[in-house]
Length: 216
Image 1 (cartoon, rainbow, N blue to C red):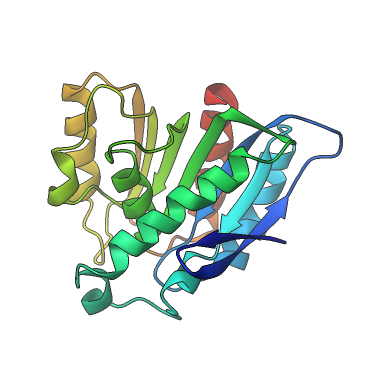
Image 2 (tube, one colour):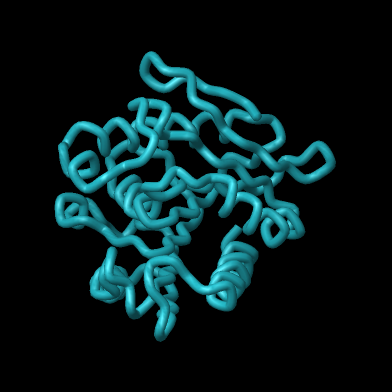
């Protein structure tokens, strides 16, 4: 584990790096509202590291002292900007590592983390990322206007029966990226909700590894 500064806070960054000197492509995992980093980190690591890609996970809740984010927290206009700032700082910290190729970094966002990853790609003066994988997220209206032809190639993964983040969010993002002529893929999972079955989780991990293997 390594750390970096974001604002006046020290933020942890989990790391799983391939053997050797690099520089390697890298993926930054951005967790969801439950703050469950270990589940997705442990699940995705075997699929990512076998590609010779470094995997990192940012503890961005540490910027705000958050343990679990609820709707009020997400919509208060305070936390999300600070989390986006921390996401930017995390990308800079990763890019500065001698073992990482700074031109080949992707974001993998889960739920709230997917919203943040997509929003980050619309911000001016942000570090460009090579690709985004977003699982069960979407792009909020306040950030849609910032999406331009420079938006990264994106993989959209969503359950059709999601009652927390409706699948319409995935279809809206698909339409937006189509209009912007952004390379992207969308995979919807019938009979799957916000929390995927083991079978769907495996398909998500495989689709993620395939997409990132091509884009990184």
